[in-house]
Length: 114
Image 1 (tube, rainbow, N blue to C red):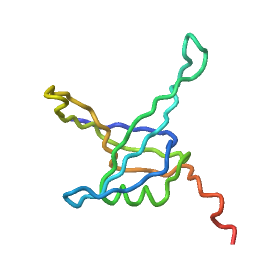
Image 2: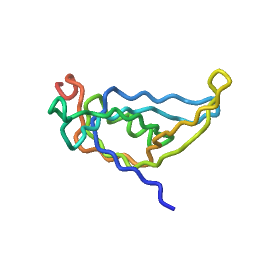
Image 3: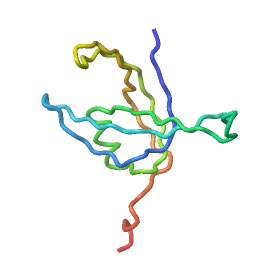
Image 4: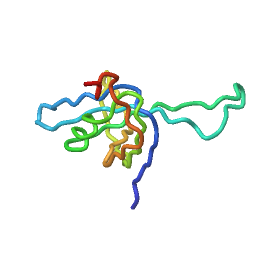
């Protein structure tokens, strides 16, 4: 079976690593991915904002280098899980990033001025 997702987009916020109760490091990255075709009504390209979850070393390394506006490629997989919202079971699909390739990194303005 095959479960692969490839995304290329710009990050919409700086990344922040958090540690779960079980001691695993994770961070959430939202990618802005422009669609390859124009919207029929507006004649503009729509953008999808796709949340990606990163774990452990991938989360730490990516958060060190990737800032808001950086362009990255993500090799990921889809994962499903069931959550309970007010006694209603809801199935969700998550994008789990397994590898991040840095394409165009944005740096803070004050970096490298000294």
